Amino acid sequence: MILHELVEYETLRVVWWLLLGVLLVGFAVMDGFDLGTAALLPVVARTDLERRVVINAVGPVWEGNQVWLILGGGAIFAAWPPLYAVSFSGFYLAMFAILVALILRPVGFKYRSKRNGAAWRATWDWALFTGGFVPALILGVAVGNVLQGVPFRLDSDLRIFYEGTTLFELLNPFALLCGLLSVAMLVMHGAAWLVLKTEGPVAQRARDWGSLAAVATVVLFALGGLWLWAGVEGYRITSAVAAGGPSNPLAKTVERAAGVWFANYGTHPWMLAAPALGFLGALAGLAFLRGRREVAALLSTSVAILGIVSTVGLSMFPMILPSSIDPRSSLTVWDSSSSHLTLFIMLVVTVVFVPIVVAYTAWVYRVLWGKVDAKAISDGSGHAY
Image 1 (cartoon, rainbow, N blue to C red):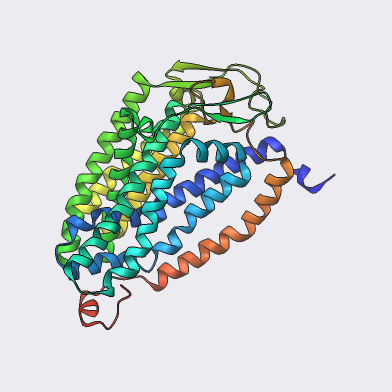
Image 2: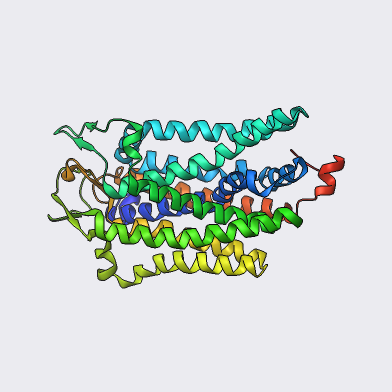
């Protein structure tokens, strides 16, 4: 027997769906507090020294955190090629806006302190804010559009045709609600990080804004769920499913119906743990922020992110990317993956290298543990930015 056949194709598909979720949660947790911190920069820091404290709170770690975004994109490209193709066709302008915003972040870090002029530094401060706020918003908007379905179709040769129009089509009311939830969630997480890494007025302002963001996260998450139940049709497979068959999205039938995105919770009640973690994590984050429990607050906001992101994936399973104009073309876990051998080889590579990445990341955070020293920044004896 060939080695890769020891693991069933169906099992590998589920494993890679889970791994993709892990990578997306990893990005939201690890790079999320960077984005949230940048979005908070204009409101938590009022002097140049305070802004430098905020920047140095994430400056040494943001590049490593962004590795999770690269891993997520690579996993989509290798494990789910049709998903990668449709996403980068349909969301091209949105992704371009995200990339432009993300490019502003390293440039802002590197160039902000090259000159002492107030106007110069203020310009780069707003660039850093843009690099945090815009990706947080648009990534949430993208999730909102995925839940509603994306206007693409496949022809008989499995060629992909995206029939959307402009970027503004993506900015529909439900998607904007999801975008605001994403911003609130990451601002809450970024505030928890700042409370952990800073002291004095910056930490107090971060605590106040983080508390507001935690309340907004709970409210927006609840509103999103109600809207999804009452006003957004879901997608379900109505034909036989060949979980271990070849990847051919057209070999099934799909229908749209109200309330479908909640069906999995009735079939598998354990999945209710995901939205519960979303609500409880945000509420615990609020309580710990107000109670000045710094580490507990950061862990709680991380749990909230885990719950909210997992809720989307579990609600849609086995759908990955539904089509709003031709439901049969919708991409699922069972019919849009790479080959059996490809998934197995990637799994072996992942098992070997991901623990190395995690171990190195843990070591870096251990070395960099502690508060940012404002005095060291002001006298130039110990700062990076």
